[in-house]
Image 1: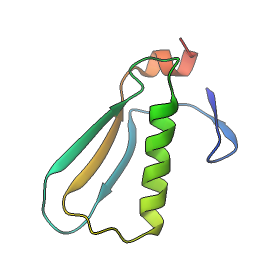
Image 2: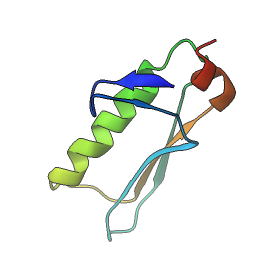
Image 3: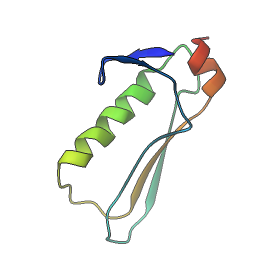
Length: 78
């Protein structure tokens, strides 16, 4: 578990970090984060991007998908 500054709570990491898609067809962009368990900033950063996209209309075609790599290492901070 790690402190998430976006929510102010301790959270456990999950495989799918976030997903953003629009109805317009386009490519899929896959973002991998959290490959090293002691480097959670990529996961937290992608969560922040997805949270912002929820509240804004972006000129976007396709799908943006974020995946956490090493869940065991992330959740044990090693």
